[in-house]
Image 1: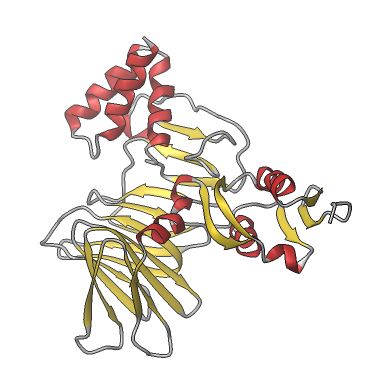
Image 2: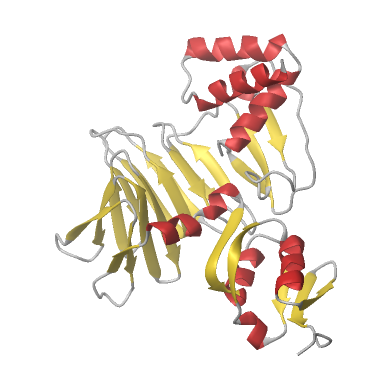
Length: 317
């Protein structure tokens, strides 16, 4: 019975958006058995159909009482063991996406939200954007941070992301835009996009899946290239993970510290230059430190606010 429930929950989780009749049918299914609501939540989390992160550190699992109306049924999911939830997250089933909205995430917050047009936006920590979905165009203004978009096809309404010095236009594709300081990076994971510098006159380039472009504020032509594996690793945060393949410990620590209150600190410069390979949970810096303790023979000192990493002075040379 349990397998059948999980299978049916996965089928419901894959349906988006739902028609009014499907919403009624889902309400009826949820009411059939007390396990159905929890199964649907697990399926939503596994598929990363998550609305918003509500806390930088997971603290447990809370299930709110189900309300009778479809649009008000909500669950709150959090848990250190959930890969899909690097932070505590609220999954809103049947989210009523607005046609225009301002979204901002804080340290450790990761949001995944369906848009009213059927697209999905995955918003990284410390990001800010404005979403405006009009009848003739879909426009995203990215002020800072990183967002990955899965764009629903609609040739009558172009999907345009404005990141200051650079713009992107897509139809039925998936791509990320990162705006950090004065620099902008665009990476395509599916399909193709058109990109151009905001101050350019008709200079448009096409990026295919697996390709990237890096714009700089000095007005020089963007640096482009193909790096499908590196792009996928850089987007591991969508699943609550950090993927390392040759990055230094200093780079890994900087990534972890964006998502956790308990900060990693490297005390030894030589240790910080060590290169790492592995897949780690964003919300588990202590587990990452234990791995370093075993693989690099690092000395780890833990306090409530800090995890200090240094060379083990007692190690055999």
